[in-house]
Image 1 (cartoon, helix red, strand yellow):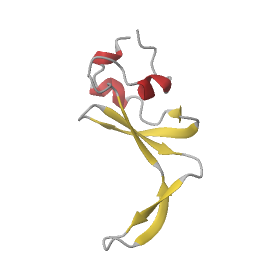
Image 2: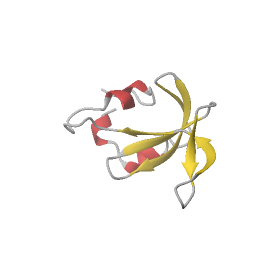
Image 3: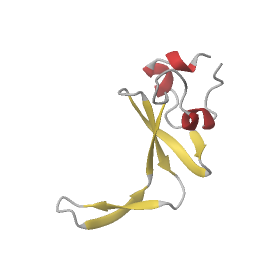
Length: 90
């Protein structure tokens, strides 16, 4: 499969898939069209503090990661995306 030419619909089919990102158990929760990129949510105990509207610490929420499909040059698959093992890229 040519990962450089994946459509947004193909990427959206990945929503809900469990993945491992740098050794952390995650799940694909969203696809961002601008990039494009996958949004992953940590499914383990790693959390971040979410501030309220006044900038004060509020509650702990699962850590979120944004993984771009392409590297900075736009000519190759980003290594973090390839490491997810979701697709067999040529």
